[in-house]
Image 1 (cartoon, helix red, strand yellow):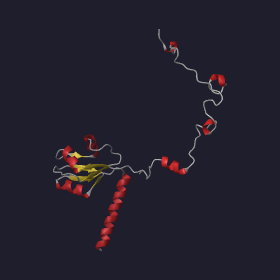
Image 2 (spheres, rainbow, N blue to C red):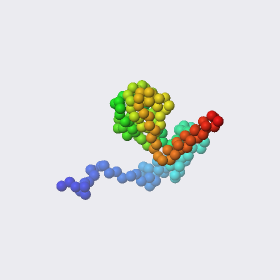
Image 3 (cartoon, rainbow, N blue to C red):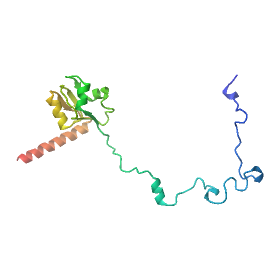
Length: 173
C-alpha cells in the first residue's frame, strides 16, 4: 500500500551538492568555480556587491514622489445616475446608492454632483451636495438632505454656518 511514509524518490532524482575546494581531482578545486581574484572571488563578495556612485543609484530608484493623503476620499454620484437608477418619489440614501452599485464604499461619505438631468422628484440623502446639484434636485420637486457621518462633522458644519451668519450680519450692519 502507498502511504506518505513509504514514498521514496526515484533513482537519479536526488543529487548530492558539489563540494567545492576539495582538491583538483574533484574537478572543482583551486579556484572553486569562482574564477581568479576580484570581489566575486572573495568570501561574501557575491552577496555584498555594492554600487559605488550615488548617480547610478539614483537612476535605479523609481521616480515615485509626492505624498499620499490620509483623508479618505468621498464617493461621487451624479444627478443623472440617480435619475436612471431610482423611481419617482423614492427616498435615496447612501445605503440605497451602495445597493444600486453607484458607489463602491461609504467610508468617506458621498457627494452628489450635477452632471446629467433629473426630472423625478427624489428625496436624496448624502453627506454633501454641489450647489448646482442641490438646485437641480429641488427644481425637479425633490429634496436634498445633508446627512452627517459623525457628531464631530455635524458640530463643525454648525460652527461654519454660525460664522457665515455672523459675517453676513456684520456686512449688513
